[in-house]
Length: 77
Image (cartoon, rainbow, N blue to C red; front, side, top):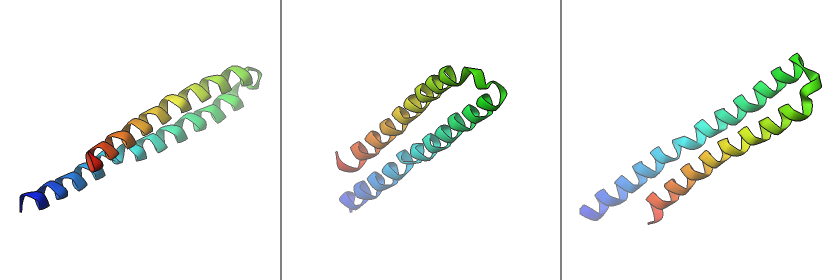
C-alpha cells in the first residue's frame, strides 16, 4: 500500500513539475513576438534587438531545462 502511494505521489509531482515547460513555451513565444514588434518599430536596431532576443530565449530555455531536470529527479530518484 505504501509503495503505491509513493509511486502515485511521484507521478503527480512529476506532472506538476512539468507544467513549467508550458510556461517556458509561452515565454519563448513572448520573446520572439516582442522582437517582431520591435523590428517593426525600429528596423535600424535589428542586430542589437536580435542579440537581446537570443539572450531572452536562452534564459527562458534554461528555466525549461531546470523544470525538466526537476521532473526527472522527482520521477527517477
